[in-house]
Image (cartoon, rainbow, N blue to C red; front, top):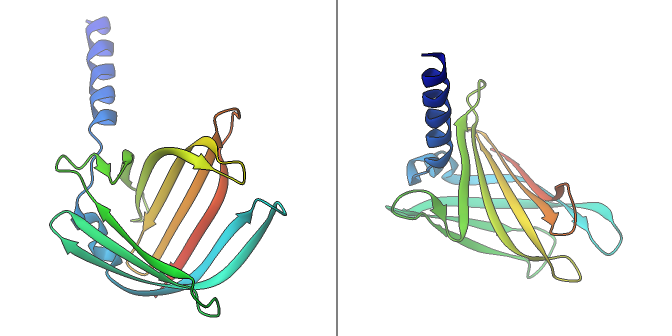
Length: 162
């Protein structure tokens, strides 16, 4: 009986881990105007730099949302990112939904995984995009782990309030 319970518990936990999904409802709290800063790791100097930024977010369809970034004082910088959620809710653009949970303080935390080149040498890496959404606070962090390294490090982080 104990063995059966352990097997069933393990299967339930594994099934939960593989069924993480999101919907546009998760991103409705982002709609509107935000202000904050972007802190990023400058690969050339290996130092962190910060610049002011604003963001406007909107849900643009039944499976899409858009984040429009502007950098006051940085002429010609900024742009819009359009995110399309797969029908099953397990992928946003080419990023796999690794985790979705509501933390004890009410923060919706979503972790997305992606592969691609990064850095001055365009080395292949795994990216974890960590989104932390609250009514008046939003944090989006990009973590990077190069294929030849063991640990993730923070590449950049947007921190917004309204």
